[in-house]
View (cartoon, rainbow, N blue to C red):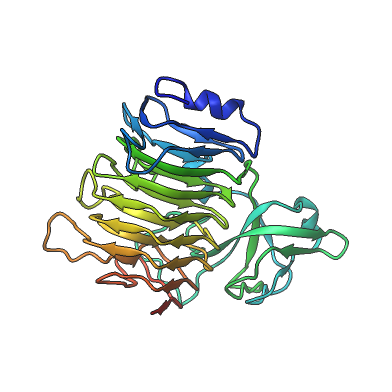
Amino acid sequence: RDPGVSSQAAISACAPGQVVQLNAGTFSVSSTITLTKGVVLRGAGSEGAPTGTTIVKTGGGTVLAIGTDRDTICSGGTGYALTRDGAKESTTVSVGSAAANFSAGDLALVDLVDDSTVKQGDCPYYKRVSGRSVSQRVEIAAVDAAGGTLTLSSPLHWTFRSASPYLAQITRVTRPTTRWAGIEHLRIQGGTNTSYNGAMAGGIDISNAAYCWVKDVQTDGTIGGMHVALTGTYRCVVRDSYFHHSASYGFGADCYGIVLRCGGAENLVENNIIRWMNKPILFNVSGGGNVIGYNYADNSWSTPAGWQEVNIDCHCAFPHMELLEGNYAPHMGASITHGNAGYLTCFR
Protein backbone atom coordinates (compact mmCIF):
# COMPACT_ATOMS: atom_id res chain seq x y z
CA ARG A 1 0.00 0.00 0.00
CA ASP A 2 1.18 3.50 -0.87
CA PRO A 3 0.56 6.70 1.16
CA GLY A 4 -2.99 7.94 0.65
CA VAL A 5 -4.48 4.45 0.60
CA SER A 6 -6.53 3.40 3.66
CA SER A 7 -4.48 1.02 5.79
CA GLN A 8 -7.50 0.21 7.96
CA ALA A 9 -9.55 -0.78 4.94
CA ALA A 10 -6.75 -3.09 3.79
CA ILE A 11 -6.54 -4.68 7.25
CA SER A 12 -10.30 -5.17 7.39
CA ALA A 13 -10.24 -6.88 3.97
CA CYS A 14 -7.48 -9.30 4.99
CA ALA A 15 -8.11 -12.82 6.18
CA PRO A 16 -6.21 -14.00 9.27
CA GLY A 17 -2.68 -15.05 8.39
CA GLN A 18 -2.20 -12.35 5.77
CA VAL A 19 0.06 -9.26 5.73
CA VAL A 20 -0.71 -5.64 4.87
CA GLN A 21 2.54 -4.30 3.42
CA LEU A 22 3.06 -0.53 3.55
CA ASN A 23 5.53 0.93 1.11
CA ALA A 24 8.08 3.58 2.04
CA GLY A 25 6.70 7.03 2.74
CA THR A 26 4.51 8.90 5.22
CA PHE A 27 0.96 7.79 5.95
CA SER A 28 -1.23 10.33 7.73
CA VAL A 29 -4.18 8.90 9.66
CA SER A 30 -6.93 10.60 11.65
CA SER A 31 -8.31 7.42 13.25
CA THR A 32 -6.49 4.71 15.19
CA ILE A 33 -5.38 1.80 13.00
CA THR A 34 -6.72 -1.26 14.81
CA LEU A 35 -5.98 -4.97 14.43
CA THR A 36 -8.61 -7.34 15.84
CA LYS A 37 -7.56 -10.54 14.03
CA GLY A 38 -4.38 -12.34 13.09
CA VAL A 39 -3.16 -9.90 10.46
CA VAL A 40 0.33 -8.35 10.30
CA LEU A 41 0.82 -4.63 9.57
CA ARG A 42 4.30 -4.37 8.07
CA GLY A 43 6.18 -1.27 6.94
CA ALA A 44 9.32 -0.77 4.88
CA GLY A 45 11.58 0.12 7.82
CA SER A 46 11.56 1.69 11.28
CA GLU A 47 13.86 4.53 10.27
CA GLY A 48 10.78 6.09 8.71
CA ALA A 49 10.29 8.07 5.54
CA PRO A 50 11.69 8.49 2.99
CA THR A 51 13.34 5.05 2.90
CA GLY A 52 11.15 3.50 5.60
CA THR A 53 7.51 3.87 6.62
CA THR A 54 6.14 6.56 8.95
CA ILE A 55 2.56 6.63 10.24
CA VAL A 56 1.55 10.03 11.62
CA LYS A 57 -1.55 10.28 13.80
CA THR A 58 -3.45 13.57 13.65
CA GLY A 59 -6.13 14.80 16.03
CA GLY A 60 -4.98 12.87 19.08
CA GLY A 61 -5.60 9.30 20.19
CA THR A 62 -3.68 6.04 19.87
CA VAL A 63 -1.70 5.54 16.66
CA LEU A 64 -1.92 1.73 16.47
CA ALA A 65 -3.92 -0.78 18.48
CA ILE A 66 -4.07 -4.54 18.79
CA GLY A 67 -7.44 -5.17 20.39
CA THR A 68 -10.04 -2.60 21.35
CA ASP A 69 -10.57 -3.04 25.08
CA ARG A 70 -7.91 -0.63 26.41
CA ASP A 71 -7.94 -0.56 30.23
CA THR A 72 -11.56 -1.76 30.50
CA ILE A 73 -10.23 -5.34 30.30
CA CYS A 74 -8.64 -4.83 33.73
CA SER A 75 -11.78 -4.80 35.85
CA GLY A 76 -15.10 -6.56 36.35
CA GLY A 77 -16.40 -9.96 35.33
CA THR A 78 -17.85 -12.94 37.16
CA GLY A 79 -15.37 -14.61 39.47
CA TYR A 80 -15.80 -18.34 40.15
CA ALA A 81 -14.40 -19.66 43.42
CA LEU A 82 -11.55 -22.15 43.39
CA THR A 83 -12.71 -25.26 45.27
CA ARG A 84 -9.11 -26.24 46.08
CA ASP A 85 -5.89 -24.29 46.30
CA GLY A 86 -4.30 -23.49 42.96
CA ALA A 87 -0.77 -24.54 43.86
CA LYS A 88 2.22 -22.62 42.55
CA GLU A 89 3.60 -24.31 39.40
CA SER A 90 0.41 -26.32 38.94
CA THR A 91 -1.39 -26.27 35.59
CA THR A 92 -4.72 -27.40 37.04
CA VAL A 93 -7.41 -25.30 38.70
CA SER A 94 -10.43 -26.83 40.44
CA VAL A 95 -13.72 -24.90 40.18
CA GLY A 96 -16.41 -27.59 40.57
CA SER A 97 -19.57 -27.12 38.52
CA ALA A 98 -18.35 -23.69 37.34
CA ALA A 99 -16.05 -25.50 34.87
CA ALA A 100 -19.02 -25.63 32.51
CA ASN A 101 -18.68 -21.86 32.06
CA PHE A 102 -15.24 -22.19 30.41
CA SER A 103 -14.01 -23.42 27.05
CA ALA A 104 -10.58 -24.40 25.74
CA GLY A 105 -8.85 -21.33 24.33
CA ASP A 106 -10.46 -18.87 26.75
CA LEU A 107 -8.33 -16.31 28.51
CA ALA A 108 -9.06 -15.90 32.21
CA LEU A 109 -7.76 -14.08 35.27
CA VAL A 110 -6.90 -15.80 38.55
CA ASP A 111 -6.75 -13.58 41.65
CA LEU A 112 -7.16 -13.63 45.42
CA VAL A 113 -7.68 -11.28 48.37
CA ASP A 114 -4.57 -9.44 49.56
CA ASP A 115 -2.78 -10.61 52.70
CA SER A 116 -0.04 -8.94 54.75
CA THR A 117 2.53 -9.61 52.01
CA VAL A 118 0.77 -7.19 49.70
CA LYS A 119 0.57 -3.45 50.33
CA GLN A 120 -1.90 -2.03 47.86
CA GLY A 121 -1.16 1.52 48.97
CA ASP A 122 -3.01 4.24 47.10
CA CYS A 123 -3.48 2.21 43.91
CA PRO A 124 -6.66 0.12 43.63
CA TYR A 125 -6.50 0.41 39.84
CA TYR A 126 -5.73 -2.11 37.05
CA LYS A 127 -7.25 -4.97 39.04
CA ARG A 128 -10.49 -6.85 38.64
CA VAL A 129 -11.51 -5.71 42.11
CA SER A 130 -9.68 -3.45 44.54
CA GLY A 131 -7.92 -5.55 47.18
CA ARG A 132 -7.11 -8.40 44.78
CA SER A 133 -3.66 -7.27 43.77
CA VAL A 134 -2.01 -10.63 43.01
CA SER A 135 -3.43 -11.76 39.69
CA GLN A 136 -2.38 -13.77 36.65
CA ARG A 137 -3.73 -13.88 33.12
CA VAL A 138 -4.02 -17.52 32.03
CA GLU A 139 -5.16 -19.47 28.99
CA ILE A 140 -7.51 -22.44 29.34
CA ALA A 141 -6.02 -25.42 27.51
CA ALA A 142 -8.73 -27.96 28.39
CA VAL A 143 -11.93 -28.26 30.41
CA ASP A 144 -13.05 -31.31 32.39
CA ALA A 145 -16.61 -30.37 33.24
CA ALA A 146 -17.33 -33.73 34.89
CA GLY A 147 -14.28 -33.48 37.12
CA GLY A 148 -14.70 -29.74 37.71
CA THR A 149 -11.16 -28.84 36.61
CA LEU A 150 -9.52 -26.47 34.17
CA THR A 151 -6.13 -27.22 32.62
CA LEU A 152 -3.96 -24.18 31.94
CA SER A 153 -1.47 -23.65 29.11
CA SER A 154 1.18 -22.47 31.57
CA PRO A 155 1.70 -22.93 35.31
CA LEU A 156 0.53 -20.70 38.11
CA HIS A 157 3.23 -18.38 39.50
CA TRP A 158 1.60 -18.02 42.92
CA THR A 159 -0.34 -20.28 45.27
CA PHE A 160 -3.93 -19.09 44.94
CA ARG A 161 -5.52 -20.25 48.18
CA SER A 162 -9.21 -21.07 48.15
CA ALA A 163 -10.05 -20.75 51.86
CA SER A 164 -10.98 -17.55 53.69
CA PRO A 165 -9.58 -14.92 53.82
CA TYR A 166 -7.90 -15.50 50.43
CA LEU A 167 -10.96 -16.66 48.47
CA ALA A 168 -9.18 -17.24 45.17
CA GLN A 169 -11.30 -16.91 42.04
CA ILE A 170 -10.97 -17.33 38.30
CA THR A 171 -12.76 -15.01 35.91
CA ARG A 172 -13.36 -15.84 32.25
CA VAL A 173 -12.61 -13.11 29.73
CA THR A 174 -15.85 -12.76 27.80
CA ARG A 175 -14.67 -10.14 25.31
CA PRO A 176 -13.21 -11.44 21.99
CA THR A 177 -9.44 -11.85 22.29
CA THR A 178 -7.12 -10.78 19.47
CA ARG A 179 -4.59 -13.48 18.55
CA TRP A 180 -1.56 -13.66 16.25
CA ALA A 181 -1.58 -10.00 15.16
CA GLY A 182 1.70 -8.21 14.52
CA ILE A 183 3.13 -4.74 13.89
CA GLU A 184 6.53 -4.58 12.18
CA HIS A 185 9.14 -2.34 10.52
CA LEU A 186 7.69 1.15 10.84
CA ARG A 187 7.90 4.45 12.67
CA ILE A 188 4.92 6.08 14.37
CA GLN A 189 4.36 9.68 15.42
CA GLY A 190 1.73 11.99 16.87
CA GLY A 191 -0.33 9.76 19.19
CA THR A 192 -1.74 10.86 22.55
CA ASN A 193 -3.91 9.62 25.38
CA THR A 194 -7.14 11.58 24.96
CA SER A 195 -8.78 10.27 28.13
CA TYR A 196 -7.88 9.91 31.84
CA ASN A 197 -4.42 8.77 32.89
CA GLY A 198 -3.88 5.11 32.09
CA ALA A 199 -6.83 4.74 29.75
CA MET A 200 -4.77 3.97 26.66
CA ALA A 201 -1.33 4.22 25.12
CA GLY A 202 -0.56 7.09 22.81
CA GLY A 203 1.72 4.92 20.67
CA ILE A 204 0.76 1.23 20.47
CA ASP A 205 -2.06 -0.05 22.67
CA ILE A 206 -2.23 -3.86 23.03
CA SER A 207 -5.14 -5.11 25.11
CA ASN A 208 -6.88 -8.46 25.67
CA ALA A 209 -4.45 -10.07 23.22
CA ALA A 210 -2.54 -13.34 23.00
CA TYR A 211 0.41 -14.38 20.83
CA CYS A 212 0.68 -10.89 19.32
CA TRP A 213 3.85 -8.91 18.69
CA VAL A 214 5.59 -5.62 17.98
CA LYS A 215 8.93 -5.82 16.17
CA ASP A 216 11.31 -3.17 14.79
CA VAL A 217 9.17 -0.13 15.56
CA GLN A 218 10.35 3.38 16.39
CA THR A 219 8.53 6.05 18.39
CA ASP A 220 9.74 9.52 19.36
CA GLY A 221 8.95 12.70 21.28
CA THR A 222 5.79 13.37 19.30
CA ILE A 223 4.07 10.57 21.28
CA GLY A 224 2.16 11.59 24.41
CA GLY A 225 1.39 9.09 27.17
CA MET A 226 2.58 5.46 27.15
CA HIS A 227 4.50 4.48 24.04
CA VAL A 228 3.56 0.79 24.31
CA ALA A 229 1.01 -0.70 26.73
CA LEU A 230 0.40 -4.43 27.18
CA THR A 231 -2.88 -4.61 29.07
CA GLY A 232 -4.24 -7.98 30.14
CA THR A 233 -2.08 -9.72 27.55
CA TYR A 234 -0.82 -13.29 27.36
CA ARG A 235 2.36 -14.45 25.59
CA CYS A 236 2.82 -11.26 23.59
CA VAL A 237 6.24 -9.96 22.44
CA VAL A 238 7.83 -6.52 22.06
CA ARG A 239 11.31 -6.72 20.58
CA ASP A 240 14.03 -5.14 18.44
CA SER A 241 12.50 -1.66 18.71
CA TYR A 242 13.55 1.89 19.58
CA PHE A 243 11.25 3.95 21.80
CA HIS A 244 12.64 7.33 22.73
CA HIS A 245 11.67 10.73 24.13
CA SER A 246 8.27 11.86 25.30
CA ALA A 247 5.93 14.72 24.58
CA SER A 248 5.82 15.45 28.32
CA TYR A 249 7.88 14.48 31.36
CA GLY A 250 5.50 15.66 34.08
CA PHE A 251 4.07 13.45 36.79
CA GLY A 252 0.64 12.03 36.00
CA ALA A 253 1.32 12.32 32.26
CA ASP A 254 1.77 8.58 31.51
CA CYS A 255 5.16 9.35 29.95
CA TYR A 256 6.30 5.72 30.07
CA GLY A 257 8.01 3.49 27.51
CA ILE A 258 6.78 -0.12 27.74
CA VAL A 259 4.15 -0.93 30.39
CA LEU A 260 2.93 -4.41 31.40
CA ARG A 261 -0.27 -4.32 33.44
CA CYS A 262 -3.60 -5.78 34.49
CA GLY A 263 -2.38 -9.30 35.27
CA GLY A 264 -0.60 -9.66 31.92
CA ALA A 265 1.55 -12.79 32.05
CA GLU A 266 4.14 -14.75 30.04
CA ASN A 267 5.01 -11.73 27.87
CA LEU A 268 8.50 -11.08 26.45
CA VAL A 269 10.16 -7.65 26.17
CA GLU A 270 13.54 -8.22 24.53
CA ASN A 271 16.34 -6.37 22.76
CA ASN A 272 14.76 -2.91 22.80
CA ILE A 273 16.25 0.54 23.35
CA ILE A 274 14.04 2.72 25.55
CA ARG A 275 15.35 6.19 26.45
CA TRP A 276 14.17 9.57 27.69
CA MET A 277 10.98 8.44 29.38
CA ASN A 278 9.67 9.04 32.88
CA LYS A 279 9.95 5.26 33.33
CA PRO A 280 11.34 3.37 30.29
CA ILE A 281 10.01 -0.04 31.44
CA LEU A 282 7.24 -0.39 34.02
CA PHE A 283 5.43 -3.26 35.74
CA ASN A 284 1.92 -2.18 36.76
CA VAL A 285 -0.07 -4.99 38.45
CA SER A 286 1.63 -7.51 36.17
CA GLY A 287 0.87 -11.21 36.44
CA GLY A 288 4.19 -13.00 36.58
CA GLY A 289 6.16 -15.04 34.10
CA ASN A 290 7.07 -11.93 32.12
CA VAL A 291 10.66 -11.68 30.86
CA ILE A 292 12.42 -8.34 30.43
CA GLY A 293 15.60 -9.39 28.65
CA TYR A 294 18.59 -7.69 27.05
CA ASN A 295 17.10 -4.21 26.80
CA TYR A 296 18.90 -0.86 27.02
CA ALA A 297 16.86 1.38 29.33
CA ASP A 298 18.43 4.73 30.10
CA ASN A 299 17.89 8.46 30.60
CA SER A 300 14.86 8.38 32.88
CA TRP A 301 13.59 11.91 33.11
CA SER A 302 10.95 13.74 35.08
CA THR A 303 9.68 17.22 35.83
CA PRO A 304 10.76 18.55 38.29
CA ALA A 305 14.17 17.11 37.45
CA GLY A 306 15.19 16.76 41.11
CA TRP A 307 13.16 13.54 41.40
CA GLN A 308 15.29 10.54 40.45
CA GLU A 309 13.30 8.14 38.32
CA VAL A 310 13.94 4.39 38.01
CA ASN A 311 14.64 2.98 34.56
CA ILE A 312 12.98 -0.41 35.15
CA ASP A 313 10.41 -0.02 37.90
CA CYS A 314 7.17 -1.21 39.51
CA HIS A 315 4.09 0.92 40.02
CA CYS A 316 0.79 -0.46 41.35
CA ALA A 317 0.85 -3.55 43.57
CA PHE A 318 1.57 -6.38 43.08
CA PRO A 319 4.04 -7.29 40.31
CA HIS A 320 5.49 -10.69 41.20
CA MET A 321 7.58 -13.57 39.84
CA GLU A 322 9.09 -11.53 37.00
CA LEU A 323 12.51 -12.09 35.41
CA LEU A 324 14.82 -9.20 34.45
CA GLU A 325 17.86 -10.64 32.69
CA GLY A 326 20.79 -9.09 30.84
CA ASN A 327 19.47 -5.53 30.79
CA TYR A 328 21.50 -2.32 30.84
CA ALA A 329 19.90 0.27 33.12
CA PRO A 330 21.36 2.72 35.65
CA HIS A 331 18.55 1.85 38.06
CA MET A 332 16.27 -1.13 38.48
CA GLY A 333 13.95 -1.24 41.44
CA ALA A 334 10.63 -1.97 43.04
CA SER A 335 9.48 1.38 44.37
CA ILE A 336 6.63 1.44 46.90
CA THR A 337 5.18 4.84 46.07
CA HIS A 338 1.91 3.29 44.86
CA GLY A 339 2.07 -0.16 46.46
CA ASN A 340 4.69 -2.88 46.67
CA ALA A 341 6.01 -5.75 44.57
CA GLY A 342 7.76 -9.00 45.36
CA TYR A 343 9.75 -12.01 44.23
CA LEU A 344 11.41 -10.34 41.26
CA THR A 345 14.63 -11.86 39.86
CA CYS A 346 17.33 -9.56 38.46
CA PHE A 347 20.07 -11.52 36.73
CA ARG A 348 23.19 -10.48 34.81
